[in-house]
Image (tube, rainbow, N blue to C red; front, side, top):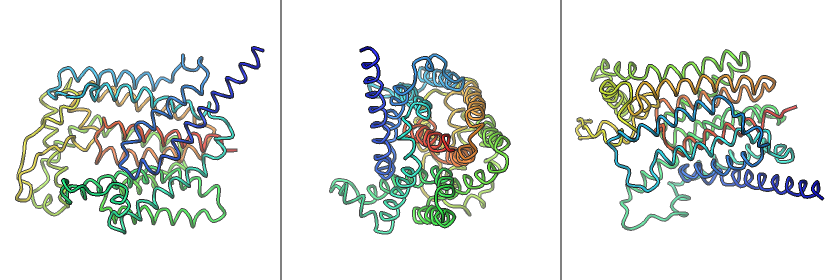
Length: 410
């Protein structure tokens, strides 16, 4: 009787975990096309499923990288107490980040706890959802955002330019998601399809096309970086992983010096590049100066939202910092100081050890993971805010996709 009850409970648990994971896969293209904010709850659902799927004894021995990440996040949360930013929400941003990442972390257990019959379909599912995501994006771009406007018609009280910019930003996020998916996509295509190289070429051309149509240089930069790292990892996995993680640590630890170096770029050079990159140069130089004011503990969580100094930007007055520094290293330094930078770098170091031990016998997962991390490093260096929940969510999701799809290869 007890054994029968236990079997039914195990079956029910597997059913819930499978349904939750399939739901995440189905919603993936929609979340990506809508701007990515839904990746935070989707990652939370996947993480909860991961916790449900695993033996409770494994939870008592979490990987060291999770413990280091928790320590980093606790320091990030603590820094909010001296931040000049007054969060009006009942559930404040640092609390949401802390709770969110605790939930997202459960995805590390999915490769071990997801039922085998579900794992079997994951590779082809990733190809399908990535293709749908790319198709929706390309269609919206070539038709003047007709799909976005059909689903969410422009409101008369919203200026058309503002609505257009909002849609542009949503689709830009989708481009970066495709760049992150590229390494795992090409790995699956090459191993699973007789004409894999043709499909890989089509995928790369699609990524280039949507990046050009979306006028998003970071999409191309991240895609190229992911591909280069992917090729390098095919030859030397451990060396490549060390390079990527090492570059990530350097980009954090030496971010203030890099930002300070922006002061030496000439006005002629700044005006010769695109406005968005000129703005980044001004922003990084300014934030590096702010780091020097509070180098050890930083200005506090979300303090960048209060950095309101302006400058003359090609004839217009503009704030130097747009919500965040658009550079993960400077963002961490400016708000959590050297302590935060050291803890973030330590987290990356132990993440390296975690991947080496988990992927030692899985060469396809090795190259896909390295390529994914290379693309993520480029995006973190040039664009999103480091505390954005949706960004953490998509990183956890795609990382788990790689492990689930490729760790169980024969």
